[in-house]
Amino acid sequence: MSQATDTIRVLASPADQAAHVPSPYDPVDPPAERSPLAEDAPGSAAVPTRFADFKQLIKPRITRMVVITAAIGFYMALPGGWRDTPWAVFLVAMVGTALSCMAASAFNQAYERDTDALMKRTRNRPVAAGRVTPASANAVGLVLAVAGVGLLAGSGLVLAAVLSAFTIVSYAWVYTPMKRTSSVALLVGAVPGAMPPMIGYAAATATPSLFGTAGLDAMGTLGPAAWLLFAIMFVWQVPHFLAIAWLYRDEYARAKLAMLPVIDPTGTRTFRQTLIGCLLMLPIGLLPTALGVSGRGYYVVALLCGLGFLAFAVALVARPTRANARRLFFASLVYLPVVMAAMLIDRV
Image (tube, rainbow, N blue to C red):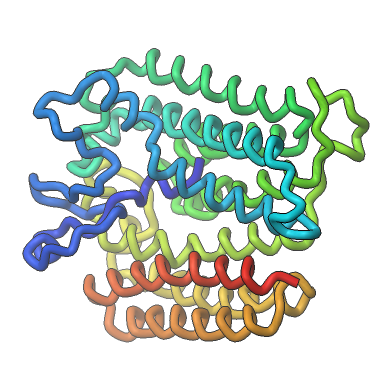
């Protein structure tokens, strides 16, 4: 559902393992031992079971992250906060979003089986390893996509269903193949990566009705908060993923993926775009207060987080080392949840 499927494992380099610092995010050229939090880890059994393969195929950790951001969008659309929550609609929206995310993950692994097989961090995925056929993975994806989008549409959450379908298509069949040919794939993939809050917002503003029998004005809308969440998540992904891609450029090069650090061996363009992304985060992160979505407390938090994020990017540009790239990556992991939590708490 998002580029996060490329980042739910990280920092399994020899130095990291020596320091015993596992992380749930994307590794670069990891040794044979893998992070215990890796999404692609085969599980406790020596030979992956059918259930373990299915779990790897749908990426539950990624799905959980997507559902959380969709729930944030849902909440931001409610005039009275959780007191006004239509819990049945909320449940339908979250389940539909989760199923759609799982579908995108299955389609992605079916398409990327060849490149996944070339990278240590992904070669144990069920399709890449040959334990699940591409046809089976696509069948699972199709069933999940029909179930997820169909649940949303059939419940009258029409705009949410349209956005969910768009996310699946843009991620699985636009971003995924583009990774082999163009570094612009990062920006293309940031679009579906930023869609979950909009799906949640659209669901919360719809008037649910069986099989979408309500009028067009009841199918859901997208207000300022939805677009602000999209903008923050979209821009945030640039420094976040460029830091990862720089760390893991050898893996991506081995798979012949056209990530920017692969075609930019000196790192000049990579670090420039990383810095630009962090610079843009400052004004974009402050817009919720300027537009009356969040209060002054949020403004202070977003400003401090934005300046801290920018400081790590400047450090990476000044001294482009793996350690500084890793620090920027961790800074990105702090920035997004803190800023979103502040937006929720200090909502106007």
